[in-house]
Image (tube, rainbow, N blue to C red; front, side):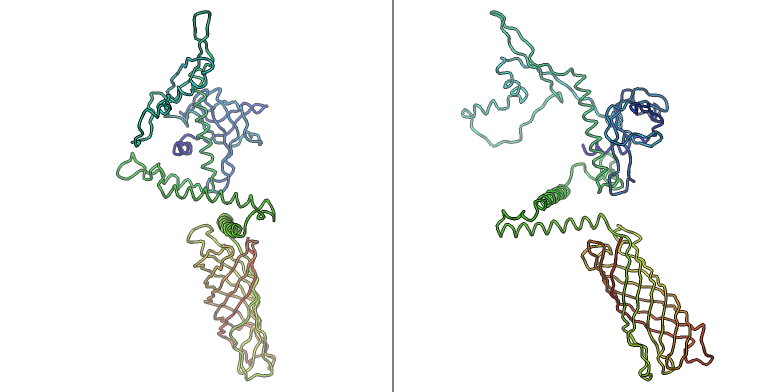
Length: 491
């Protein structure tokens, strides 16, 4: 049944445009007609609007209304909207999807109908009718004392040439000394019943199709892959239509998870008094289950709503010191840096590539170095770009330590001054390569913390100085090791 329900997605669904409609909105004109080959006059159908991309994890298709074809032309068709299913009105010129009865049910044979007439006494009409429908299967049970019990070899089977039996009930009426049959209940006309059954089947298949497609976990590529035929025999699917034991297990687990979540939410709706009826042992068990359910909900939330971008504000302390002790008159005590960092995950939700991120940073760095036995203050302003790898947890995981490794390049400018000698100068700054390692921790409210250790070699090239014979170097290599602490916000 599920496979049949999904067939409209392959060949029984029409993409069409509403090219005309009456003033009342009840008569519709679509740009598909007899040339399609799968439309019939008098067809029933369902008009569907696509509100999201088929690859989005959201509600994708919404039924708009039930329609019936009243006229079929070569390239267009007229329909009557006899039941509206959506508050939003149909819009002329918009594109819609149309599922039709003939296309969906094409290839299915009509049900074989039989007729059964039960003639009985009026007071026994109900009992006799039920016995006839059950083919009197309980008759031997009434005489069980007369027969020994034996081990059943198989379940009871019913074989019939018909799919449905229409029952009519007649009773005996007396007319003087004679009896005659009088109708008590007449079943529907066969063709009318067959028509109603066909429409009910069509609507069930459309409902199953919409439910399947609107499932957030549904994916067309995965579905079509399941329908692939085997290489040695085109008649057989590569994956059987009957679910395996493992698939049944996953289905039961999914149903249990939904039931547990409903129970958990129902308990929380009672407020603080929800546990008053539990003993200590029962409460301990329930709290353990609630904790498990919270973790499940949290994991589902994280997977469904990962954040792609993160902004960091870091404060870093220098781990290395390039100053000299031979200039005791001036020594920069606190050497620090402030970083504003933007990190992005380019391949979000990809099982492997989402572990890699890119980032760009603006840094203000207050550091120092040594030049000819004098200490020099260095104020650096630079930009960097880098790549990070999260080997254990993905970067968007909430309430778990996400460890990462990274590499970066840096470019900027700096001003240097030697307070002891009065020399000043300006430098271009470049850093290749820079390496770093750290850990970030995301909270559920999108805020978080980060700790980071980094090491890079800065190359300083002088382009301006206030003295001809300055003590400041024309070129300098400076090793910078830092430990950073910061806060983050993800979005």
